[in-house]
Image (cartoon, rainbow, N blue to C red; front, side, top):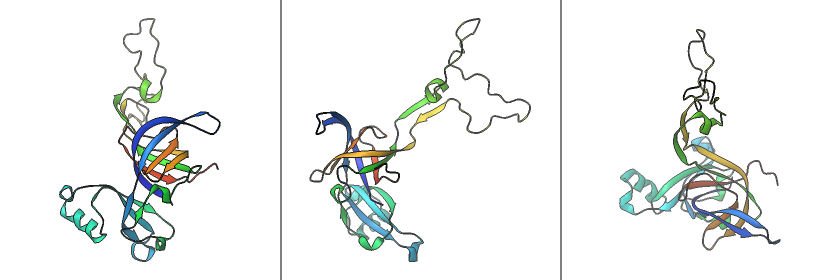
Length: 212
């Protein structure tokens, strides 16, 4: 599994070979360093741990500092574990850039935390149409209405679509086309929007359900 960590810089547009406008999200992807390698014999599965966005040494505690020191890697802010089929291709301390994993035309899955929108009602959160505004209805136009429960079961079922916190959830957008890769500046451009605001940390993976 090819994967890298990145930071969302924002959206812009580029023109393709036929002079058509293509909306893209620009991501500062990598570089990342491998801080730990897990294998089937010792850990029961194969994976690599990658670190992104370097920190000053005084910004990490002693256990974290020791972990990075053993890998001979500068302390980093974000650490993610990525499953791989064969760990023999990797070594601790190895640097991985966006140009090592992605090329234009590939498909990618992007995971991030969506924008938080606070407490929201059912019309905004679940697209309810609301209730009527005439015939004596009094301030219930945006209310959810009856919940449908009675003496049995005498409770509201879990998962009912009701008002509550909206957004701020881990979200994955599948099958985004990689439009451009700038390995010199560690920039990745994918077609369309990705979760989160500017500055959000993203995981960019090779698409698992590619239509290509």
